[in-house]
Image 1: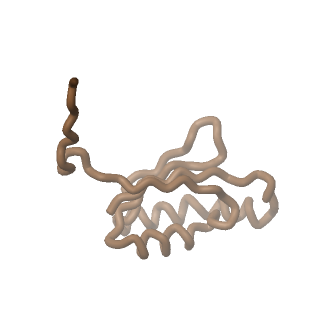
Image 2 (image 1 turned 120 degrees about the vertical axis):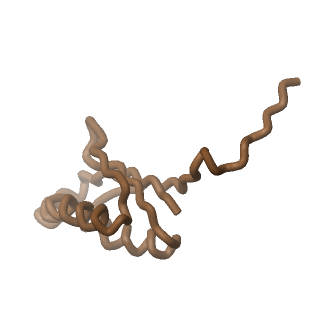
Length: 96
């Protein structure tokens, strides 16, 4: 299962703890990448946050990994389940 997560820092929560959490994200992401649980990590240009693609076995595993993110309590998240277009059944379109 793949999930796209776009996370943005909630700047109203700016604190020493938040700054530490942001600093810890790179190591957390590198660990997930080396474990094969995150396949891609990107900065969102012009925003305080990022876009990560998770590749996990179950929804529960995804929720656990997301909840362990150092910035979990300091960010807002958009989560999208992804489907491989090459293996998804083709959509049927009607041109009437």
